[in-house]
Image 1 (cartoon, rainbow, N blue to C red):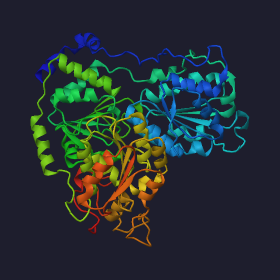
Image 2: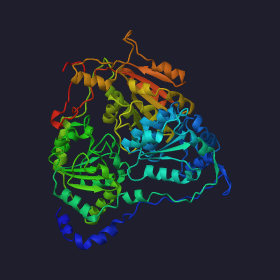
Image 3: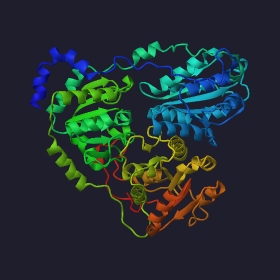
Image 4: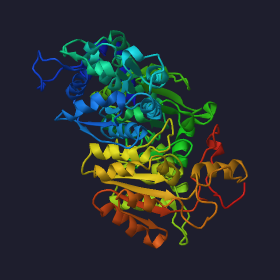
Length: 617
C-alpha cells in the first residue's frame, strides 16, 4: 500500500506517460463497412423492403424474429429472397420481442424483431420497455400504413413512434426510401453503443414498395450522440480510486449488468486485489458464483452475507449498476459506512439515486483495464484477508437453505438438482416471480450471458420466448427455461415455435398453482388473505389445472410430471437427456417463501431469514 502512496506523489509528472501506457482508445470505435457481396448489381433498382433486408445482412444479422401482417408483408417477401437470414416464426409478437431479447442477452449481439402495424406493433411494447430497463441491444422494425394514410385512423394504424418514444433509446419513422441504409446503420450503432438499448424503426408500406438504388456509403448523422459518448477514463480518476482501495479495510465490489462485457477485466481486478464481489440480479455470471470471493446476489432476496458485506463495508466499488430500489432498500441506510465509487457508462445514472464520493462516467471495461494496468505496472499489493475471514464466517453462519421434507418437492431443491445434473453448463432463462429468485439463488452462474431474466420491468411470460431466442443463437448449448405456472401460461403459445423450429429448449415448471410471489407478500403483509392469486380450478382443488402436459402434447413437445422427491433427479435427467424440446411439470407447495428477504423500503437490519406460508404473521 505504501508503494501506491509513493507512486501517487509522482503522478503529475508521470501522467502523460501513464496515459500512454494505458493504451486506451481516444474515441468511440467508428462504424466500419465490411466487404459485402450483394445479390443486386450496384445500379439495379430494388424495392425498399429488399434494401431493408440487405441492410440487415450488412449488419451481420443471420436470425430475426418476425410475425407477418398486412403492413409488413413486403418485408417478409424480401426475407424469403435472402440466403443469409433465417426467420424464427414465433406465435405472438410479444413472444418474438422477448425472443429477440433472449438472443441479444445470450450473445451480446443486437437482437432483431419485426412486426406489422397496429396491434402487431403495440404487442412489442412490453418487450421494448423491458429491453430499455435492462439495457439490451435490440432493433425492432414495424410496418406502418402508407404515408398518405398516416393520421387518418386507417385500419391497423397506431402511431408507434409516439407510443414507444419513452421506452426506446431512439426511434425512427422512415418517410424516404433513400434513408433506409443510413437509418438501419444508425439504429444498430445506437442499439449497441454507450448504454445499449432498443431502437424502433417504423416503415410505411409504400416506402417498402418503392423502387430505389441504395447508397450504402451515406454517412451516419449522429455527431451529437458521438460527442456525448463517454470519454476514456482519466489517470487522475483511476489514481483516486486506487488511493481509496489502498486506505480501505473492508472494500466490496457491487457489480451489475453494466459489467457484462467486462467479465475478464473484473476477474483480473479481483485476482489483483482480493476484493470480494456481490452481484445484482442482472450481474449474475459476470463473476463466477463458485469463486470463494463471490458473495452471490445482494438486495431484497440476496444472501445475508452479501448484504452484510455492503452494510459493513468502508468502500463500495459500484461498477455498471444503477442503485436500483430492489438492491438498496432504504437508500439512507445502504452502504452508509462506505465511501462509494460509481462507474457507469450512462451519465443519467450518476448521482440519480445515490451520491458517490467518486463518480466516473466511463465504459467499465476501459476503467478496469486502466486500474488493472496501474496495479500491475506499479507492483501494488493489497491484503484484505481479515475482511474475507469475517465474510467467510458469515457464509457459514447464514448459508442458503431449504426445508428437508420427504413429503414434497422443495422448489429450491429442484433447481439445485438441475445445477448438479447440468454441472452448471446451461443457459438459464426464467419468468418472473418466486421461481426467478430461487433460480438466481440456487443455480451457480460462472459465465456471463448464462442468466437471462427480466430484471427492471419484471415481465411475466419472459422465460420461454427468451429461452427459444437463446437456443436459436446457441445451437448445441443446453438452454433451460425455469418457469412458474403463472409466467409460463402468459406465452405458452411458443411451445408451437420450439416444436416446429426444433429448438432444444427444456422447460422446468415449478408449479404451485398460485402466483407465488404475490402469495408470499399476502402471507407476510396481508395476514394470508388470498386476493385472486390462486390459478387452479376452485371447483376441483385437488386437480392440477391447467394441464401443461396436454398443452405440450398438443404442440408435439414431450413432457412429464413429477410429484415425489424420490423421482426428482431421474425426471430432470430424462428432461436434459431427451433430444429436442421437453417440458417437465414439477409440482411444489405454494407455502414456500423466498428467503432471505428484505421488505421493500427496508434495510439490512430488517432482513427476514425464516418462516413460510404455514405460519401466521
